[in-house]
Length: 296
Image (cartoon, rainbow, N blue to C red; front, top):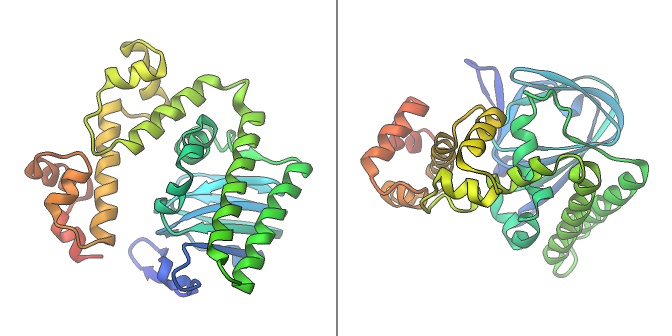
């Protein structure tokens, strides 16, 4: 697996094309162990679901580090800076999804609060809550998850007729297991967080549309003042500022991955005024949308 080292930040960046994936296949699985779990800080352009199947080690972010062990299951999103250290017989299954579009076939499932929690909320709370809200599987749950991942690995290896369709079916099975596990682990005790996770999913799915704090509060079943306070306490950001940051992040992703006109990208990300979009983009990323595209 090749990488590009950025000397100024000493962070390795992995891109989907560098994985030498099966041509045209947006789902990959890598089983890695020991130092191969990457001791260098790195990011990637794809979604990664990591399951520690044996041993233990330390999971590091840009600001914190946390112990991990057999049974830990968590999401690593695009641009999340991370690495592992102090690996002791550690083996990790990495399920890689090229981008969010891989999950769109399973949109009904993703609207479940439990999956919103896994994909949206827990990663955002990870540093603040010191990795206490991630999933830790029982042995029975481990067996179920690893069985699905092993089937995926077999499909990728054999590449029999319509293997990509089989991979999508196995991904759906994986998501159903994930949904059940999140409900068992958190559903009863953290119902309010689940409701909040649903609000975050709503924002993700409606970035191109007008979104108000009042609208989000109604959906969460709270009055606007209570929702605003809860949202800011949980994310560290006011609701509308959060929406704008998410829109800008989506725009940056489209600038890097497509050749769509900047004005069209702005509109797709909820900015009706292209000048305002450019102003907010430059303020956040210290470069213009055009410069971001040229640097990809």
